[in-house]
Length: 424
Image 1 (cartoon, rainbow, N blue to C red):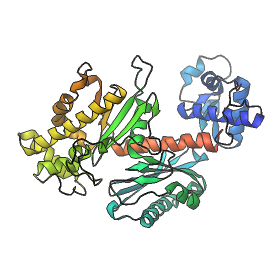
Image 2 (tube, rainbow, N blue to C red):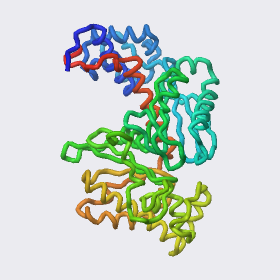
Image 3 (cartoon, rainbow, N blue to C red):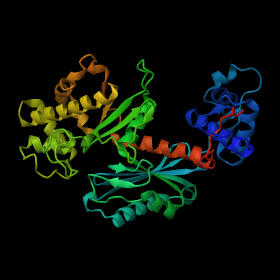
Image 4 (tube, rainbow, N blue to C red):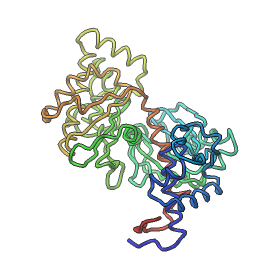
């Protein structure tokens, strides 16, 4: 790895560090930036002056600083100037393509949502052309609200219910559409002139939760954590040793499509015996209503229909309750296999099916029998404070903004070798 010797390379690297610091700490002083980054005061002053001149960050005068006056007053002398990311410096777009649902939100550079557009469509009928057409039409509609948003668009994140390539460029496969192997990143980059990342939905949920609920080290120095989506499908986002886990060539971690039973129930993916074929909302509904397990999955289970199913299961023992118990067992067995690979670690359950967790809880814990030495209560958390949709947007918007911090305004990929000298 080569040392950095050119001043422009060093300057860009320092910009990245300072922008990352500002991303994680709203409205802070140059002194505090120096403390958090380890950069010298002179370097912070020079780099932040450039960022202000480039209209990437704002300088807040002392008289307008009302957020942390107690802290500021502990320092003698002149009140410190606070710095903040400039909202107008960049716009990002987050696009979600889930079952029969397309949504676009724009965010400013500070992460504030600017607008939101939704569209209902039958994902099972999409072709490559109609998919791209629907995406661009809805993005264009959002960008048309204000000309500045289109001019400042720097990055787009497309969140996909399915498998994508590990480089976040191509859609590979999804259980909700027949569209396969599309280089969506290149198509959208050519259309908008902005960077594009194509990501898996559950990985964004896991990223949002991991950031706000970073698990404590378990004594081995590893930080493992996962979020499992229990809803229209079953998905997994997994952090292993503090990093989001992907496959060698694809996004991987397709927990819902792990084999539970050979030649078992029909999954929406077209295969038989997947965990999803027993634990998703359509699988629970299929079992509860007495349909054959090879019956085609219901296209969409409404909130009202599922709520009625939960009510019946709570009232008495019967096929409805048995359906939820079967779902819990499927999740428990899947986790048993997962823990055999990675050792037990904290799991957050997210999604609409969590409303029925008490009906699945006993059978889920029972099927973690291989790990009786680990208390299930310490592993499983039912996350119901926010919907999966809000978590997806949190994770995806943060990904887009951090990409801009590094790749557009900071060090980026301009140089192949990262610095090995102390950049002070």
